[in-house]
Image 1 (cartoon, one colour):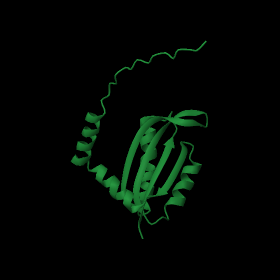
Image 2: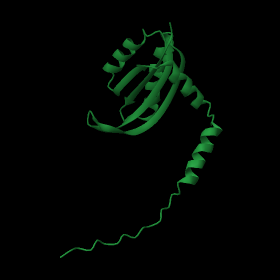
Image 3: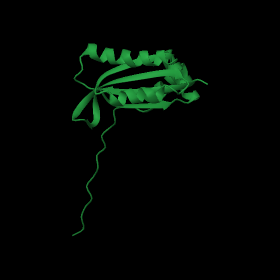
Length: 141
């Protein structure tokens, strides 16, 4: 049975654009050869890491969303573990309700009710506040 998976991995920041694209293509081809379907690739680009990894402060983030039976995960992670260009990787199984939510976001649909409620909140809460004068408390000597 096919499950939805999300994999995020971080490549070394000193890779050229061509080398990074080759790495992405390499892992994408691996998934295709191992019967993964509906593969979506999202390259986030170079971002600051939360903490240094292998003395690197930045990394190239890549996200894969795909459907597979789960047998592809272990071999792919083994390849990434041995690869010097990959700093970190993580694969998770995505729940069905989250898939529906993200597909709605992918369609770039904006719910008019949410926009209307947001505008109402903005009108009720003005961003500028009036300065209030506070009188000093008289001390009893």
